Length: 96
View 1 (tube, rainbow, N blue to C red):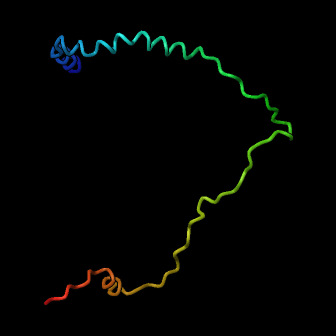
View 2 (cartoon, one colour):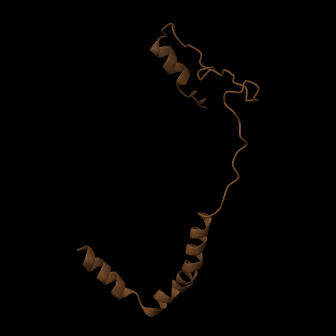
View 3 (cartoon, rainbow, N blue to C red):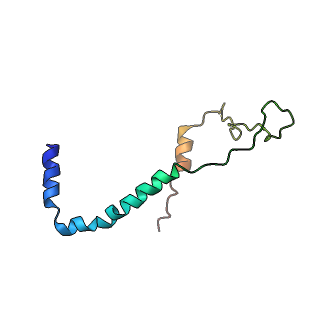
């Protein structure tokens, strides 16, 4: 089934549609060369720091609570559902 769909798709492409993709294929060798050369780039090693040296400067560590803005909402006294409905209901328009 897949082979038939691929064959149908390939048959429907005309010569002008194939020429649309020519610039991409002409740039492929230079893109491939660029990708291969990026693997050859050398990096500068980080400054040699001894982890056992107590004089090495490090970033400070601070405490920040993950639930700092939390406020407990319980216990809450129950309200009448009728009062809550009256507050949520739209105000009636004055009939004139």
